[in-house]
Each structure stands twice: as structure tokens, then as C-alpha cells.
Length: 157
Image (cartoon, rainbow, N blue to C red; front, side, top):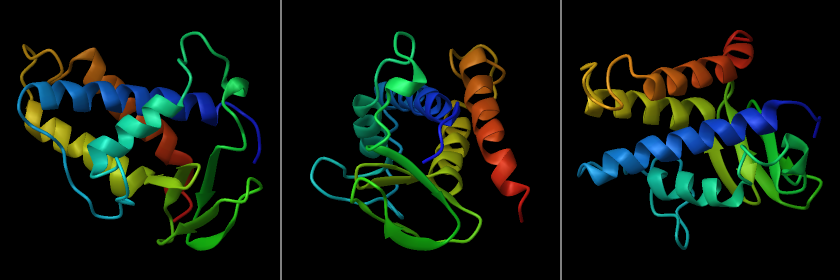
């Protein structure tokens, strides 16, 4: 896997997504879709998958992107199957989709993270008075990070 800032950017996106999912759940709304989520063990839905991934990542405020073990964090673009250098089998089921993997757990950029962003936006609404609604910095950062992450891949269509 090539080196570069994508690992740190991915860690920041997962950390921010986890923070907003936690806030939604504290307010009585769990984002719990299972479509395409590898449900096994503690991973029961998208919220638990993001939580599991966030716990696997080092604290990005104190660690360098190079400290995220390359043998655990991988990505693959477009439909395909194979093995990463760490021996983990992977499958990406859709063309024009980016799958991120920590060990054998997968999360898709568009199918999962975009849907989470939309559902969080629907739940928190557009009120600027809400701590994570409307034009709040956290919500803007989530959408900005998703757009930055997805732009190079979505432009290949």
C-alpha cells in the first residue's frame, strides 16, 4: 500500500464520524443500518463498525500517520477481490467504490460513510443553534472531509 496522508485523513474521518454517531446516540437516535456491514461479533451495525475502527486507530492528535500499521489498514478502489500483503482477504463489491479495511473489517466511503453523513444531517437538522446541526463546525468538517476523500475517486466515473 502506498504511503501518504490518506491514512491520517482516514483516521480523522473515522474519529469525527464516531464523535457525531455518539452524539446522536446520546440523544436517542442510533444510526443502525446493516447493509454491506460485515456483522460479526461486536460489530452489529454501522455505528458499532465505526466504533470498532475508531478504537483500532491511534489518537491522531498525538500520533503520526506513519504510526498506523500498514499491515492492518488498507484500501482498495473499484470492484475486486484478493489478498492484502498482511494475508487478509478483501472484497469490494461495487465499481467506483473505495473500501477501507482494518484487518478483515471493511467500510465503504460512499455506501457507508456518505450514508452516515446524510442520516446524521437528517437527524440533527439544519438548525444553527444545535451543537452539531446546520452550519456547525463539526458537521461542516464531516461533510468537508467526506468530499475531500471522495473527490479523486468519484471523478474517475
